[in-house]
Image 1 (cartoon, rainbow, N blue to C red):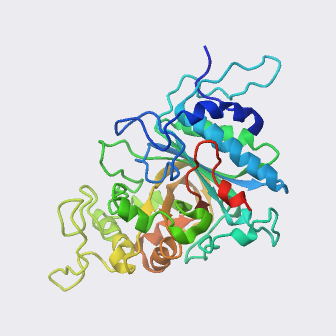
Image 2 (cartoon, one colour):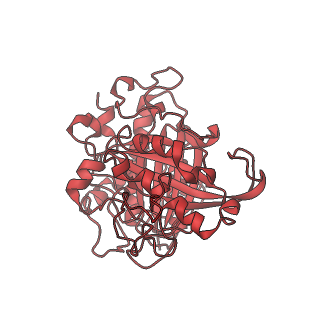
Length: 412
């Protein structure tokens, strides 16, 4: 019996799977909200507006080759491996006299709605002043160097990356295996820069997950089923050239001082967030879906939703209508010596946990940057959280069968 997951050792070997992959219907998931398989191919990359899976494994890579054709070959190999893994195809047995063609930890597992979303960092275009691959002139204007925000304490080893992949699945081992497979294919071409595993709470279907601070996370997300809205907020339009149909991903690990947060009074926690903890409703309202009333005041004339609360500062009304699509996950890295947090709450051995913040938008300059510049200065939550890394990545449109992700970029 052959294994259901695996990878081939290079682009040449992967080409043999192309005929099988071409038979898959592009961009269509099997029926049902919890379908076990998603086809990798389509107009847009999967894993952006796809219903969020329970687990994520995010990885950023540094390119270590100076050959443009090697980068293109890697992206082709990654594309075909991702397409294969997302459908859960079997892999022939390996040669006993050779390293096994698959790491084996996902043998017998279902695809678990696996999606893999690829992004290109600024370093693919120019790095240390060098145009390594002749792509500098094709760097999108929207792929900016993110500004340094108030309170940032970015750790170089957890920041940046030339290539990135967001692997999401309902089984954490499936997501991990997917990234491990890519890393093996990248041997000699790219190497890990930083990684972060994430998870969401397993509530009832359709229920907003809770983050590690105990609050519902993502209540105000725009509806992914509204195609016109997604075109407005998420997908790059005709102005994007080779990025048309793609999106820009911001990924940031945000450490949360949970020990400090847990000592705060419930009322203060709710004022910090701007919502009731149990129901998720805006302060002064009873249901999670109730709209924010930013004009409401209490008997003393004070805003019911504090002026420096998290939800007020992140609301479109406070940011000239700016919106992003959140796809965040909680993370827990165990105990660690925490020395870089600001303010210096009990520096020492603490739980290294927080939020793997991921968001998508048509243009980060009018999305994440516009919103977060405001929040970084005034958000009450800043006394409990520290942005410790991350990056901005241009996620090209989805690939057609027989082509690789980002192929339009290399066709010059």
